[in-house]
Amino acid sequence: MNKYKIFFAIIFWGIFTLLFACSRGSLGGGTIDPPPPPVGTSDVDFWLTKNDQSVLLQKQSTVLAFGTTANSNPSIDVDTTKTYQTIDGFGFTLTGGSAYVINLLNATDRTNLLNELFGNGANSIGISYLRLSIGASDLNASVFSYDDLAQGNRDLNLDSFSLSKDTVDLIPILKQIVAINPAIKIIATPWSPPVWMKDNNSTIGGSLQTKYYDVYAKYFVKYIQAMKANGIGIDAITPQNEPLNPGNNPSLSMSAQAQINFIKNNLGPAFQAAGLTTKIIIYDHNCDHPDYPVSVLSDPAANAFINGSAFHLYAGDISAMSTVHAAFPDKALYFTEQYTSSTGRFGGDLKWHLKNVIIGSMRNWSRVALEWNLANDPTFNPHTSGGCDQCKGALTLGGTITRNVGYYIVAHASKFVPAGSVRIGSNITGSLQNVAFKTPAGKKVLIVENDGASDATFNIRFNNKWTATTLAAGAAGTYIWN
Image (cartoon, rainbow, N blue to C red; front, side, top):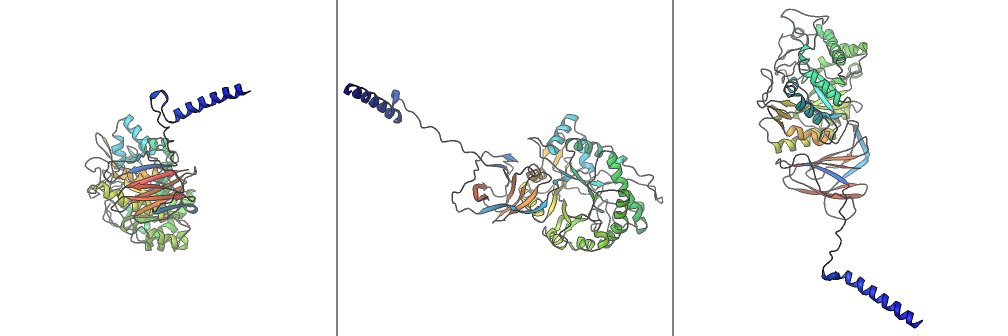
């Protein structure tokens, strides 16, 4: 037995020595590097745009993993137990001028661009909501309505009603968009009724004559029905774009009392009689006069026909939307227009619009956030005589396709927050403006804009775990996790 014990002892010692040599990295006279640590798995996708344009809606490789390691960073707490409004979408106004310049593209480029804008592929930004003008806006090449007559004539039966001016560019583009995204929602608004209905017989300013209220209500019905016949559903209308701005071309002045009377006596009953489910949304103007929609909604007869109120932010504060929500919490809110200027800076516009239009409107109960013009040419055309000559589209189309700041403002939301998402709780901390959502698929989305002058490191905290991230001054980040 002793011989066996000696034999096994020698074998054991040899194995031990070999293993010890391996552990010291001396086997064969070379070195063995220790295995690399496992690559961290990121729990959070992070898409970034910097204000100096060095990064434009790019997915980052940063590993963001939720954990419980303590740090001293400020935290944005995302809370799915706090829920607010349901989101209808993000997008732009498809002006007649936008449709014109898009339609100038060759068929391949046009198809590729529309898929990028309205599709849901990896390279698409998923625009889910559009605004249209009923007749011309100031970003059409010329002014028109759908029932233009020689001076002195009138058309009480709307026998001359026609969408012919929109069948050249707008409707063909819309048909392609609807084919890409059949669920897209559309709101439409007039800049002016036909001039024969107005008290000044001009495309600029003036008021709708009360004797034409009924025929104008039928004009809206005909428009919705004619668009439906072209395969385009109109989800909502407003009675007038910027009713307190009679200086544009085209435009119309419409007081709150006039809007009350038109809705309760004519427009609402006309929709009801025609069996239309298209929503009626009021106001469609700046945040400096929340008294206007409050006044209209305070009329019980008008209120019964109204879905909600729409806002712009060329004056006032975005919190005006919450003022109206507090007064009428059962009515929806919409943010329908804000332009970026040809004289603006990318960085300044990115900050201001993310803070106010995307984050601000959502934190103040809006169901949509729309920038103004989708596209124009390099000279900021087309526009009417007297129309906006410095409104910069999200796209500049003229030989090449240039994606401007408006594109990235909207894309930081539209690509990640589909219709049907719900806003959830998140807190503002320091300069970090933000808003959070839960998508229909259950993903959490946090949009953050660093409104400060220096880089900010902060935690995203969710379900008692957190991950630290840094956002450059003036940058926008969208964070997505399951």
